[in-house]
Length: 244
Ligand SMILES: [Zn+2]
Image (cartoon, rainbow, N blue to C red; front, top):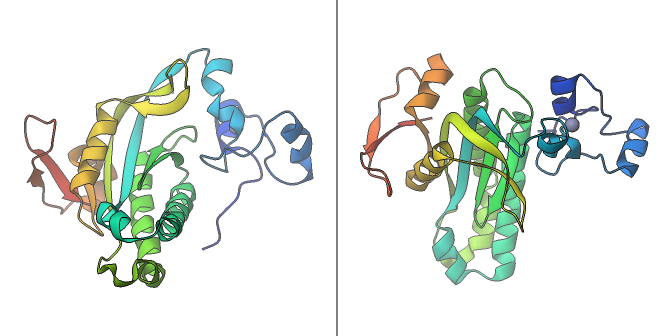
């Protein structure tokens, strides 16, 4: 699928109604002053990343958003049997497919942590139903990774392990901004993030697990799903999760 690329920054247009050109001849003078497509979402700009300080005059904001975590199952056992090059190639495919799917649904590819990616939906591009966008992105990640099964198999060779992806999604209010004094990091923190990460940790290969909050917001598409309780590290009570 061809990645749709916006000519102007969707974030700046939506928040300030300023058309910042991202591509083509018009973007050249903007690039000179450091305004270019963000590496977290090429349809937004580097200015959006810094919007807190320059526009919102704050380093942190509280937003309603959806968090998606995806990771490669069996990564730890694979890392013991595969060469560093093969592991690198495997992660390249995984990251590329995750990025493609997340950007397709206007999410922010916030972080890659080892064999996992974390995405934020509803910032800086606002989305009415960000939970649904995240779910669609998750399904797209599963589809895209399944389509590259043969390449994964070639890389893992005799390891006898099938590469699969597990995904967790949760939504709600979280804190987004710059954290840390010496090493400044633009990211989201809070229970919503931890819960999404925990949901991902129990998702089997090929599975998408979402919380009740996500189910509720997505509506029709997930109406018939039956909750399954999961015992999660750091949670007093089992967490009810639904197949997405
Ligand atoms: Zn922008």
